Length: 180
Image 1 (spheres, rainbow, N blue to C red):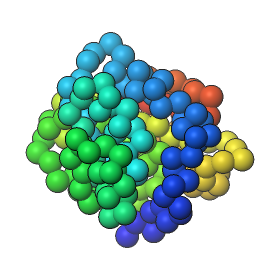
Image 2 (image 1 turned 30 degrees about the horizontal axis):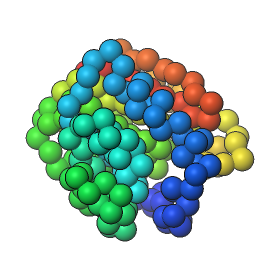
Image 3 (image 1 turned 120 degrees about the vertical axis):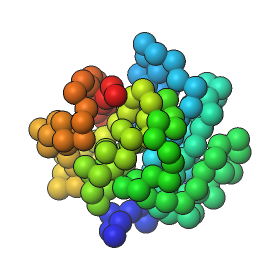
């Protein structure tokens, strides 16, 4: 299980060019657009790059990652966050625990994307936001074979019980805002 888990250099995840490429502040703005959120769960939070951006907006931030090294890194970058080891397919939180659940560049790495979306929907009280690599070759990010076709994503959204979503194509990524 979790064969696609990130095994690279953790420092690379915080490289300045990567931070610019991911448009972190714009993504957080899109997550919060229209309806404020007080609490957020960052699923597959990595080094806490997005968790830190949510925290700077005075939100209560929690995160989960399969890699214990990522949990340690997130705690060092976002000391007021609540981070733990775990899997996206079985989130250890009660129903509707968070206003917002964020999946940043995680869904393509999930062993069971439908289960991941179902769990995200379960623990979210308002919305689920997803940042993914677009379905095209790029000189960065995973190979095309690991990326998710938008038609496949829409099928997964429907199967997970989402009936309304918004898609925003960013410069280097695709953003999806799913309403509960």
